[in-house]
Length: 139
Image (cartoon, rainbow, N blue to C red; front, side):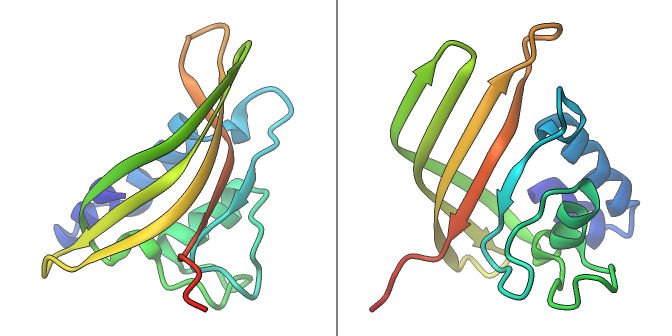
C-alpha cells in the first residue's frame, strides 16, 4: 500500500507497482484463482473476486467500480499490523486483528482485518486467499 502511494506521489508507474503487488501477494494467479476479497471502503460492489476488481479498489480508474477512488493513492506512509489471533492448518494460515494506516499528516486510521494465506508449494511464498477488512463498529 505504501509503495503504491509513493509511486503515485512520485509520478511513477503506480499501476505497474500495483499489478506486481497483486500478482505477488494475492492468489488470483494460484491454483483455481479464488480470492475472497472484501476491502474496507467498498459498499456498492463489496466483494472483489478478480484481479481487475482488486486493482480498481487500490488505484481506481475502472468505470465498472464507480465508488473506487484509489485506496492506496491516499497516500499512506505506514501500515502496522496487530494480530489478535492466528490459526494454522497444513498449508493454510488465518490471521485476524487490526492494522493502522498512517497518512502523510500523521493521522492514523485503524481497520479490522481477517486474512487467509496458502503456501505455494513451488516457491514457498504465501498467497492471500482471504482478505476481509472493515472499519470498527461504532454503534
